[in-house]
Figure 1 (spheres, one colour):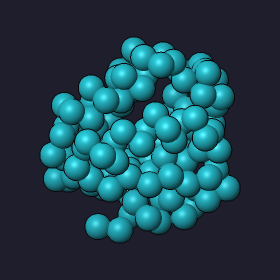
Figure 2: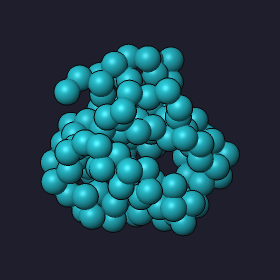
Figure 3: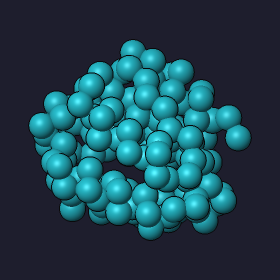
Length: 121
């Protein structure tokens, strides 16, 4: 399940993932958020809080992540993945090497630090 993170600065979008997340749910939630963000900003600055077991985040959602990454290839600014799931970091490491932008991982107890890092323009 995905939930929008409210009270973010206008140049940042955030999603909180918990319980099971499917590829369709992920894409249906993320694409409108990104499109809306790009109406106000030239870059995508994003925080994903992954507070579910990596097994509950469908492998298709990671593939969707890659599709979305390429769809907005030159638009990525800063992306923070906030999770204690070590396996998620391995999947998302791909972004650091193939998509322009800055990607960084933070443990769950450093969510505030992750948001501050993404806020920097």
